[in-house]
Image (cartoon, rainbow, N blue to C red; front, side, top):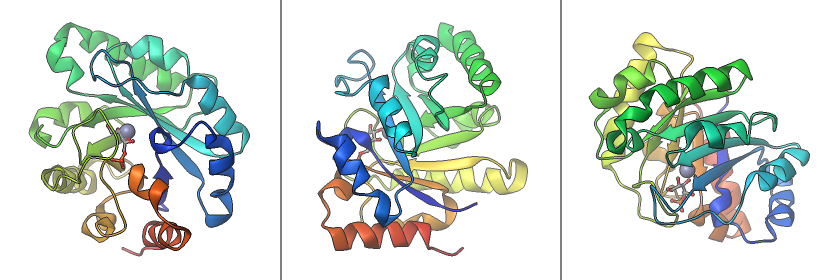
Length: 225
Ligand code: DX5
Ligand code: ZN
């Protein structure tokens, strides 16, 4: 599978549609969309499902990442928008374990709509703790920052999880899509590129000049295993 660099919408301005249009000639084909509801994480995303609809109309794919508790309610907003995937922050279940059934139901609902689904997990959560959820996932978001805001420093602890997920993928689930999210910049891509499929980059990509953006896209999309 080709590797994809996905800019994270969180870092964009209100003029995001024009900004995204300008990235298409550079080879950007997919955008990452974070949902922060101010409940599980302190921040609230400035964009909603309408932004996803608008991005889809440009012909780009979208991956959604929910950092919140209302799995089914949030997923419902995206069912008919043609999103590629939706991942759910695993640690929300540690706060509300009774939501496990709802997450399973949400996975089933997304799969029925042809949308890939799975979990996202923070650097401090070990792979062993999420292994049973990864077995139910089509895609897993390995976090290299603590979920909750953009612009944080890359956390190398997440690479230990990435390595475990990758080994698991090779042995048991070759179709599993591995997405890395958080603190990705032009200098750290080589540390993980061989083990991932989707690379999310928010603030570093957004702030980078044209040459650096192009370099980041090349490092991801033209890398060879
Ligand atoms: C962090 C979000 C990320 C964020 C990445 O909680 O899940 O998707 O947008 O942004 P950067 O690359 O700035 O860490
Ligand atoms: Zn994210």
